[in-house]
Length: 309
Ligand code: UDP
Ligand code: MG
Image (cartoon, rainbow, N blue to C red):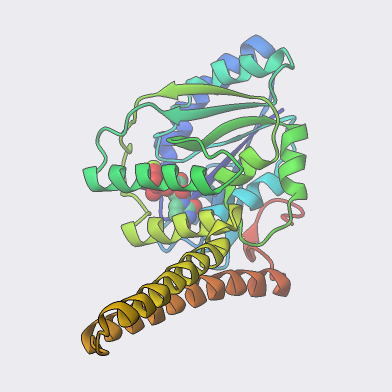
């Protein structure tokens, strides 16, 4: 069986279109390989008619008590999925369903445990967004041991082995793009050009994306924490040099003490640095704090699955 997990947040406009498209792919695969399909929709605290539409479509659904974010939705779906293969897909058709056939076939030989997708272009996306996305991938790959592939989408098909591995990671701050890569397994990549939404509007504001990128970097790197020590060492060295220079200057030329403005600049710069690093420290502390509380990642309000968690 193939489980298809679809997170939805205010997607009343797109669900029906999605089901119509995916049913074609389902026909192709089930006729050729006799696979059955299971659809698990996660209603991530939608405020529109998403839940009513899901109830009318005869699919499995899990409805959250509020908006917990796409990561929580994916996690809930992966936990509920019973299939031997599990696919994760957006509902807006930006993840082309027809590609699933190729993805499925690539896993059949048993060589790969994951068929993943990436966008080869970002056309149709605001320029500034693409720019920041590029910067993000550059930075995170510099500071993290886990490779985060540029342009990788969450759209992927995984074997049961891999899904179980992902579920065994119990952390609260879940950054799937990193987790998928962290658990390892051989991945076959499929590329396609960016496709625009079938209907509705994007749920990711720039602010949401920015915070998400910070989350990602903090989840998969501790380099920012080490930065303080490095900068501190450089500054210690610089200050020793300064002391030597000043002593030498005073001995040779007998310079009087001067430079109130420059001193203020230095003080401001240093206290700014200190605040910055205390801030970084605080962010990690906050993450650790949330992690130790071990709150559930999501809360279910309604579902037609026996045991949604
Ligand atoms: N989504 C979600 N919870 C959220 C935000 C988004 O479940 O808080 C879902 C959304 O319904 C869609 C997928 O995540 O199926 C991707 O979102 P969207 O298409 O808005 O993002 P974009 O493709 O613009 O990055
Ligand atoms: Mg989308």
